[in-house]
Length: 75
Image 1 (spheres, rainbow, N blue to C red):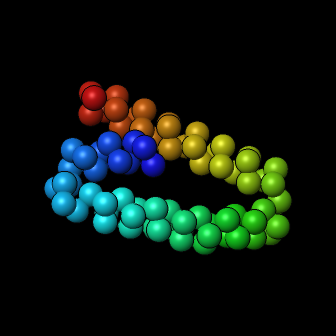
Image 2: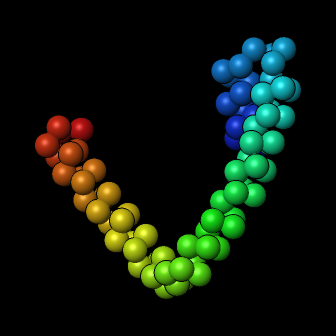
């Protein structure tokens, strides 16, 4: 939240910073209330260890693709 407040100071007009920061807190609370039960449901359905394994495989594939794109585009 502190980092988002710092970005807000640079990007948002001073008169709207309080409203935007308050909306950011409300949105974060709302999303965390949705994602926590969703994460619990996913763990119940496929198991905690499987979540870690599949997430690791997905992250490995994403990093491989990003590395391949970086070499091809010479980033």
